[in-house]
Image 1 (tube, rainbow, N blue to C red):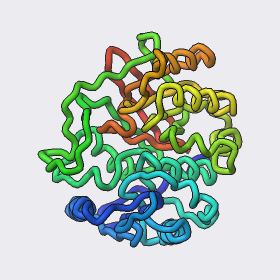
Image 2: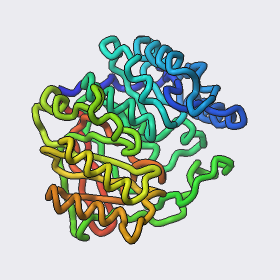
Image 3: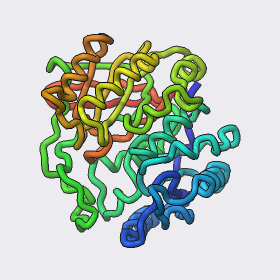
Length: 340
């Protein structure tokens, strides 16, 4: 059975640590702005040392990052953990995490943070939340899609949470942009699409993350999807949610083939792909070609350009939760149930 963390309440403490990348000094103001927004909403904040530093593609040594994360995972006075953002090499701290001593509490994030979320849910059965980063909620107002993360983290076990696709998304990033009224400049119409352009509905337990990083867990103790499905899901079908940060169309295709050949899509009921700034065409081969080949070989329904990942805003998907996902006429809806 899946274990859901207790609902996050005002006046409780949220820990901020950087198990992957920290924040360079010239961007420290982003941390202060985000901290203010959480404090204005009634939460206490504890910021770790790793948040403030960055060297050689990581916030600190793997030992320091793991030690700070372990301390927050085991601290009963910290009720949720949110990294500032993702990064590149979180995977190297996984052998240093004290999995059996980790308390059940919400961890939220995406990009390389999803490496931790994915591994933690697979290893322990504790639900984790794939959603916004700490620095992306630094405005006085939060857009309707992003803001749902707080509804998820504040939900009790058994809660039903409905999310609808965004109206618009942000086409370009700029950390220098002043949040008016939101951090994101939602300037382009959102359109969820499906392979073969027909309405899609899929049901099952959610699991996924950033393909660029979680693919490297294949063959390791942190990517054993088969054992997770048997142990914690009683062999219920999985609805995969995946997003591509940097991969070309052919690298994207190779990754999907690897996932399929290793058995990750066995007994799946569907796949949802997020919008991506990547997926560069290679010799006429596109990411749509890759998804069509995957649909043909697996007979799975596939949704793409969904509100997940590096092209905000994004919904909050809970690893381990039961979900019904629908897409038609450019719109999408996700109904999650936090059931064991």
